[in-house]
Length: 374
Length: 128
Image (cartoon, rainbow over all chains, first blue to last red; front, top):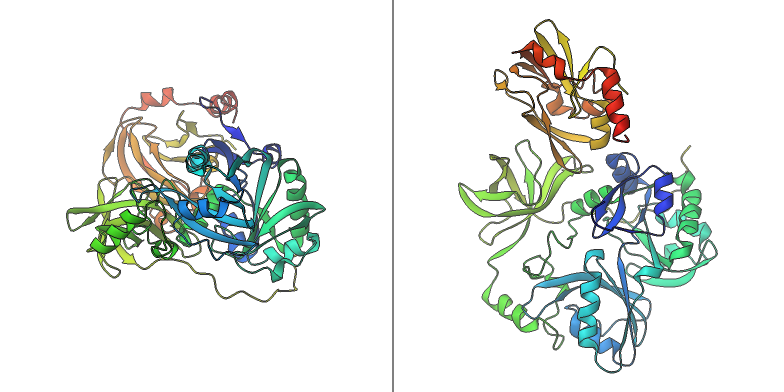
């Protein structure tokens, strides 16, 4: 391989499972173990287990840690409690998105930022360059494994192994406790649009806990799931992916992430630029497209209104649960839900309807179903 | 899985020759490498294609990939059933998942294709 790809602590396990690997964000990651559609369906209907150890973890601690994080992210973390996680964009001075991340408050003056794999180095340098006195910034990505257990049966799968009740954990809350005898940080978060947990633990324990979860999940129809299914799941749930919906040239307001931008929380990096954009209005924004003609929209394909260029697709593909070809795209602000546009697919104009996001929303949390699969 | 009685291209298409015409598709290995097929762009009936040129596009969940004409000729039929059931390419790549029928322009081109044995060697050599 030309580039030197990093391997997660579960690499040998993926090889043993016969995973098809692919390069992602500087890592070699499982794309799929079997059929992506099957893995997708398992997560929507039962549960799937993902190795997402490529994600970066940056620990920020010290008396000034809270004010540093507050100054770097667009969401308001001042009211956070211990054991709470918050999603936020992190912007440059011009309002462009440097990354989107989860802030975990471990305790006052002690936070963990969970960032995108490909951005970890840059984020680390960015956080350090703003840190100053009274804050220690440490990259713990290399010694951290991250497993995502996702799907309506995730809590049932986790429960017999956990030294706590996973079902009672609130959304975007986390606990530190044992899973299969291993000390973990477990949050009720995910990137699939389903209920689920993300489990942080020492790299060396990753494979053992994975196997314990697979064993516990056997009667619940738990399957290993790759990043292929993760991508179709997050597309349906309309969750942005850095490098697609988000980049340095895009603001969180354009991306439809305004609810994670607290312009009135006090000073933060990018605030003036975002206030100005808010005041002056957006010239383009993220919308959903649902194909009317046959064709699969993919990232980079132009969007047309009549014959005029109106934007481009950032993510697209076949959405298994909705049985439709869907895309997220940046288009000029004059385009609205209900409008009809075209996606240029290999030179051919294919009709698409502009639809509201998200495409998919899970139904209210189901009661634990006692029945097991044969 | 390689079928006897077919000829194979290095790009992982197969053709079953019957006199001066042939039926073609993509191989078992190709469909497995692609994963679930969710859409296919078929060639146009009556169009002329040259050996090695893109014949259409097959879309898996992950990506769009070209497939190529194993021989030159005129497309005489396409498998319209694939438009509604692209998964047939995964389920039965040498049968119900056939893609098109072609009228051979130059039967001598068939000599450049691979026998089942040679195609098996190719897959083995590429570590597949």
